[in-house]
Length: 240
Ligand code: C5P
Image 1 (cartoon, rainbow, N blue to C red):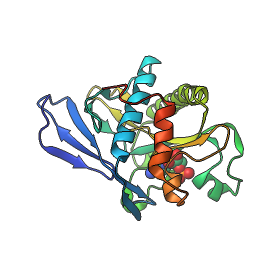
Image 2: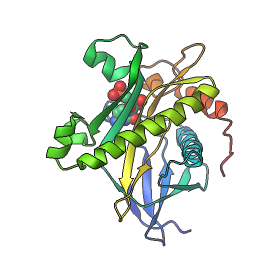
Image 3: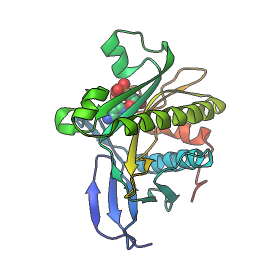
């Protein structure tokens, strides 16, 4: 497969065309951003870790019957994925109170939730990714009512699979963000990435934070935290 023109550059990835109009080439960058881009850093090795971790998790999910855009990892920092049009919603699933939810509802971080919560945010940097109700989604015509139900069910399915998978390797999946895309025929599939940039992952024994909160809150060495996740996943070069 050939890497052709740059189609899009985001905060953490570059997307290139290939000779096949249905396949795009994704390159993971070393940039790390938080608070809607207000805090930024270049962290050597982060692209390799996020590409490796995302590739492993998408493979796990595919094995468990969750269709996604993922095709294969092709190098330490690159993967091939099917072209989709991204639905401009960030679907957040929470198992334990943390981050934004703790601030918004005044609940203590670390308190388990009675059931997994799903929230939708509008993927719009200018607006600061606001929280949306289902009525807002309908008003903005971001997804139909039926599609919102599909997104919720898929997010819960992913949560069940990933929670039990992380549990097996001694890690607690506190919360995470998913993005979904649509194929030309309207089928909705999981897309984007699932990595310590997009999940909160706590060590099951020590509660050590092994995710982007290390960067957001200046808690220590981000690469070491992400490496712990990658090595627990048994991932070193497993996918290439
Ligand atoms: O900040 P908040 O508590 O809402 O984040 C919930 C989860 O979603 C966290 O795992 C966070 O890393 C992820 N998230 C993300 N991208 C965003 C917002 C949140 O990956 N733009």
